[in-house]
Length: 166
Image (tube, rainbow, N blue to C red):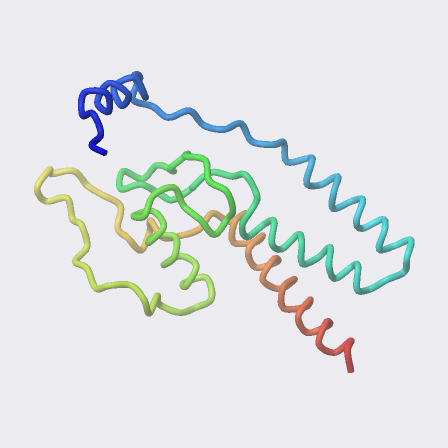
């Protein structure tokens, strides 16, 4: 069976007339905090450190992957990218994700071993002063603090869970 090319192009022409995609509305952040408070209360009432560790691990997962936030990578012109993303570890585009990966490696004091060697973009062809990749790859202070706390929480959860079984 051969598809009708005229029908296919007419279907594609009807989609995205404005050139923008519609973004799904995100849940409010307080829904997650109500869930954390309820689970924390359950852990407190049961006097269970295992449930408390589960709550801590869930909060770490939320901060790493689920929190509704913005990209916050410094663009070449020195402004923040304000595109919405899900999770502090992620960025809006592959180019911004590469910069964010560099920033995450630098956060733990290492260079990104998976980065392909590239010449820095100097902006010589446009004559515009651009922000260097080293400056662009700095995380916002709040992101650094929360990522360090979430990483520490994950480490604490792993150590306590393993030591609790012995």
